[in-house]
Length: 301
Image (cartoon, rainbow, N blue to C red; front, side, top):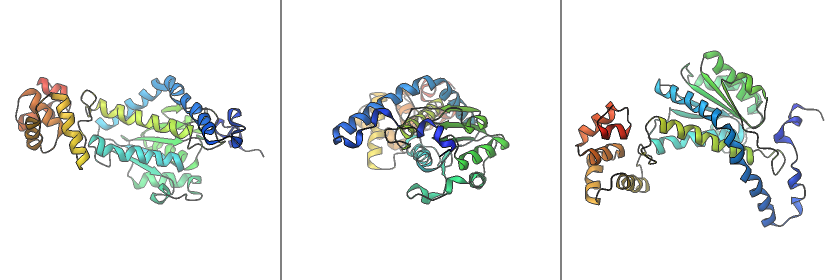
């Protein structure tokens, strides 16, 4: 059977796992774990390219642009997962990072047959989200040739948006459509063609790198604290106050007072305590420092 998919690395049988159907659970897991351990090592040489992609995202955010992840199946779900974690972790508006999946919201839970085969659907979904030239589109596809993703990437390119391709094969059609092409080739899967495994893990790691790096570059992290988190539940309120304590060394009563005066805004509370200023002055300093806590504490910006 001749098909273009047959030549893809992700569609090859893995000789290391050829007899795993005869093995007990523990030995199967040893094989999976051995393959998984290679993922971070294979990603490391890609860091310069991933950093280039992150720089584009930072530039877009600084100009009021947005980040769109576009994928089908596992790739689409991973994009939605990364996007949905940004508001609680970094206090971003939901529109700033968005995940779009072939087949729509229903496809997050259930497979939608044939949804990924339409380039036109990828175009229409981006149009519905009002894609602009200052946005960034990250097309995600293990094969590097999913029509839905290619259609979206091509439309974004025509519009003038920055286009980033994330695939798990080399030299795919995604490369020609990308301003930055991240080809995270992880080798054959433990179960042939099951790209929710190594390919999916690599995609998740890279998406985490993109948004985490971008948020740090935007001043949403002080030291290694997520100081722009939204303390929307008891656990996050506790985490917010603990970050203030670790960042400032202040006493519990001081932290409570600052947290209340800052209306639960971690950055403001830290600047209040570190610079010995009130909430209004801390807010003014943060605004002048573009949200960077270090600069606000120093009074620069």
